[in-house]
Each structure stands twice: as structure tokens, then as C-alpha cells.
Amino acid sequence: MEKAFASYYDAQKDETGKQFTTIKLFDDKEQEAQSFHFVFVLDESGSMTGEWNALQSAYNAFLNRRNDDQGAGDYFTVVQFDSTARIICQQQQLANAPRLLSMKGGGTNYFQGLEIAKQAIANDQTKSSVVMIFMSDGEDGSGRDCVAIIRQLKEQYGVNHNFVCHTVGFGSGISQGSSAAQLLTNMATASGGRTHSAQTGNDLKTVFNRIAANSTTSDALVERFSAILAREISVKIMVDYL
Image 1 (cartoon, helix red, strand yellow):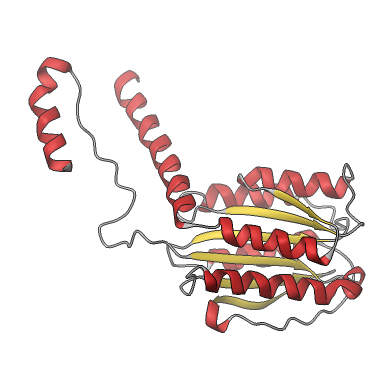
Image 2: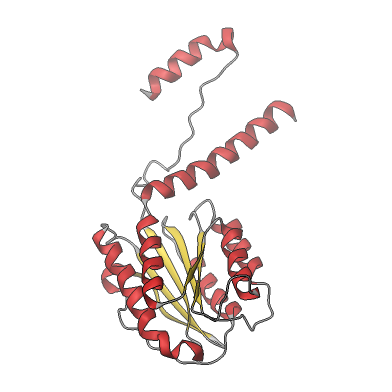
């Protein structure tokens, strides 16, 4: 079909001035069915002590949903942060993703968690679409520009990995209109993601389930097509008019 269109337009190009151009979304050897690399960045500060079981329940529900949605080829990275940050697992497939998460307790430093997550994403040599899920129940104490990190990740991995960051404000510590809520909104917006509010453990499970369900191959294709089409249009304009 592609060859037929190309032949038709090539035969008409002297008359119409139009040329048939093929935009390839994938390399010839690349599978169209894309996997996902989910990067959880989870607040394990002291204020999460009473809600840690609820977080684990929501996280496990996410894994179960991906399994139910044929996500066996997905990868999972888990980063936990308080005053510092640590990586719990890096790019493990669904079957090997940890089910039990332990917490340390401490302050709340978004920047530390994002820095560790950034390193994990940089090590991803696959073609997977990277979806960051950033969850916190409190104000960031780092004093650093966390939005800039998300913006940088989008610039570096927006095309090759369709990078997106969804943020979740959990509990009463992040009220609507607060500086913490605004920061989480700005972080999500910088990547084209969404921000969510979860007041209870059940709310958190619902949010995680929604993110898991909405991470589909068709979404990845749309993101990839939009980015590549924008690039091709820019090149065309430069060639024709500059």
C-alpha cells in the first residue's frame, strides 16, 4: 500500500508539486509493541510511617494490574527517598519486581530521589517508554529546582523513551493550593504528565490503578508520532524557506 501511494504521488509530482514522504516511527528491527519502564519515586520520610502499608498495597495493586494487562515485558525501578535516597530495584521485569518495600523514615528531599531516578533512566538501553510515578506526602525540603530536573529528563528522553512523569500528592499534608501541591503540579506539567491527589489509602490505590491502566501501547505510539512529526515538519520548513 505504501509503495502504491508513493508511485501515485511521484507520477503526479511534476503536475501537483507535491511529494510523498514516508515517516518511520520505528527502526526496521524495532518491534512496534513497546514495553514500559515504570520508575517509582516514593517518599519514605517519617510522616509516611502510618501510611506505609497503604502505599505498599497501592504499589502491589499497580503490579497486579500490569500483569492483568499483559505487561510481563514491563520494567520496574523503585527509588525511595527521605533526607537521602536509595534505589530498591533497577529495571527489573515484572516477575522480579519486589513486592515488599521497607521504609527508613527521615526528612523529605525530592531532589535526592529525582537524582537517583535520573541515573536509573540514563542506564536504560532499551526502547521502553519511561513512566515516572513520583509520590510524596509532604513539602520538599531540598530547596532545589525539581521542575528543572523533570524538564531536563523530558528533553533528553522525550523522543527515544516517551518520558513522562505523573505526580501524586498523598494525604492531608499536601492540601489543594499549597506550595507542595503546586510543585507536584509543575513537575507533572513539565513532562506532559498528570498530577493526582489521594487523601486515603484507597484513593492512592485508585490513582495507581488508573496510571497503570492508562499506560498503553497506543498512548506510546501517539506520543512518539507527535514528537517525530513535529521534528519532520520543522525540517521541511527549514529546507523550503530558509
